[in-house]
Length: 403
Ligand code: C2E
Ligand code: MG
Ligand code: MG
Image 1 (cartoon, rainbow, N blue to C red):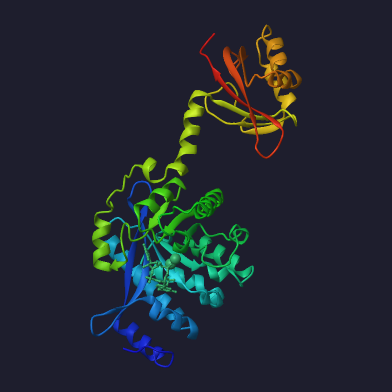
Image 2 (image 1 turned 180 degrees about the vertical axis):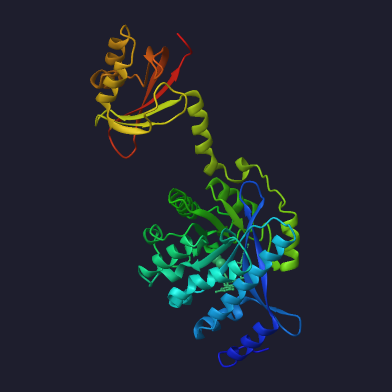
């Protein structure tokens, strides 16, 4: 069948009426547990000869003449009907997302009532539904889109930004969009994620998305190596051929009955060593030294990193080094104060460094938040920053057990 701009209007009407357009569901899985946690509804056009058309063959035409609106509401209605079926059969329901073209933003105030009406008529809790809006929608729609999305969220639905990274929308714009899910486009996940620059970009995107409280979904994940890397980025949800391709409703219903995917428990040290190494090393360092301080002795500043179970809880923090030392001294046993201050005096440290000492260490008794004195070993390792001439010290500090 030849679908073109001239005949699409007639053909789509017939196809929708005959239900030749069907919903395929692509499962989404929890990145860590490999358990089913959602699905996306994707349109497929079944032809008379039994072949199936992908959306790429008809969605662009429908976008052009506005008929996409009709298709999207049809897909959403079918999705709701399917969720109702699952509920009736006592099968555990996961959230299912449906794609909505940017053209829906022109439906204005009519959009939310229609979204609610279909779900409410079938008694479907709104939390089981997710509206996917593609990133490109945000490029030229200004502030209205924020309100549009806020209204959908306020009505209890999930909203995802689809294909993030495929277009030109900026991180700074996304921060103001009240969506709760960020779907990272498959174009950002190429090869086996072995390209250093691509890894940096992905790590940063996940970092920023998590700080803004987005649930992150990686689209188009195909290989174990990609999965391994995405796990190190803290990616929450995986959608891709590695777990499952889009499938007809009956098949997806069976997946819902057995919601565990095959587990890929690859050795992460072999597949993604550099991404994991720093984080693992820090875990070990913090276990041995619950207090780590970076100090710039040339500039009298410090940055203190957090830990758990150390004697104070005011971390992380940054500030003036001499004030830190005076504060530290104030928590020392009276007999150890002098030793502590003279050891960590900036001038005397510089002198000792110039005399060839690259490490200094003292043990002093320090009062914890509970008022008890405990011996604490404090060691300064002097290091040079390759990009500045400043003298830096890394302090590793650890309690030595009760006095
Ligand atoms: P999308 O919303 O980003 O959907 C994800 C697409 O990535 C789907 O393509 C899916 O089959 C594909 N995909 C998932 N995992 C993998 C993978 O591991 N490798 C590769 N190579 N591809 C993967 P599909 O089904 O061809 O849909 C293409 C696009 O058409 C969708 O992209 C969506 O933008 C649009 N679309 C599909 N159904 C609808 C609909 O009902 N309404 C609207 N407005 N757009 C739709
Ligand atoms: Mg989508
Ligand atoms: Mg997408």
